[in-house]
Amino acid sequence: MSDRPLARIGLDDPVDIASLLRDDELAELAQRFAEAHGVAVGVEDAHGRMLASCGALDNTGARAVVRHGGEVLGAVVAVAAGDQPGGPGPARAARLLADVLGLLLHHAHARALTHATHEAAMAHSFADLQHHNARLEAAVARLQELDRAKSSFLATMSHELRTPLTSVIGYSEMLLEGLAGPLEPDQREYVGTILGKADQLLQLITAVLDVSLLETGKVAVEDAQVSLAELIDSVVASFAPQAQKRGVVMTVKSEPLVVRGDRRKIRQVLWNLVSNAVKFSRDDSEIAIAIRTGPLRPDGDTPAAHVEIADTGIGIERHQLAHIFEPFFQVDQSSTRAYGGSGIGLTLAKAYVEAHGGRIWVDSTPGEGSVFTVVFPLAPPTGPG
Image (cartoon, rainbow, N blue to C red; front, side, top):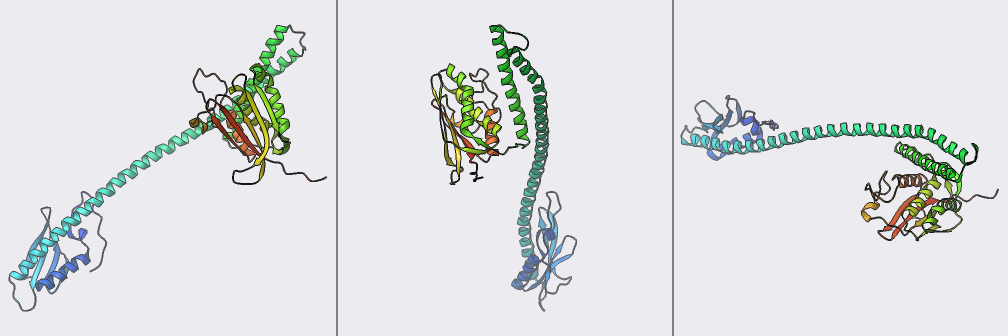
């Protein structure tokens, strides 16, 4: 007899002996009964095909029907061995073997049904998952398409808005310079306000354009020697009038450190951080700015330039710290928030710092203030000549 694999049984498939019991199992069972009862035995299926046997069989043997679930699945044939005539021995052996086969078939069928039910449930779950995955893939593709359309729109609109705004700034500057005739003091004030707001709007449009470029992964960094002390002095001077109106004092302690990178982008990083410090500081408070040498990485000893900007403002809640570098995130997102801003300054700062191979982080205590730290790699020393 061959040790054939059992056929898979579906929940509605007909049952037979050969599909539930292997040939070697039937052969071993027939041999044990033949030896135990001194008979020759055989097991037939419902069509009379011999599935397993042990000993010489003939047409004079006793027969017992094998049943399962009220259906006849086959029969057991038993014949007395040797010269002994047929008697109660073969008939009893046939009935016992038929009963044993009935029990084995019952348990085998229960296992097969459990397996089939499990497979059907798994197939249903897998089909369900495939359906959900297909919907998710379609949703992701749609979101990616919308994201590309949004980035294209932002880039296009930024370019289109810059053109007329540049004209507004240009004509405002010409009016202030008196090219169209002298202006009264009130007129100069009005034109100055127009110029300031137009310049503020131009910076916002430029920032939005930069964010749209960030989403495409295009952050071009120029390679030049940049003095951090010179940049920070320039940025502090730009915010000095605004800070003085509120009694905010800005102090700078700097080492003469030079980094290598993109001057405009590094200035934009410092501008955004000083702008936030001034914006969120309380009146009559202090902003302390320090430029010093420190490690490029926490676990390394490569020297780098650290810029620390510490304010005594409102601070940032712990659960918000992980989100402040995300695009358009505002610590106060209510419609009545006291502080303006687009929520993209820190996003650009982080992208520009990392494009230079540096790091940026913040330590903050609500109600006491925040300390932003930026790390830039130092420029390699230049040799003589």
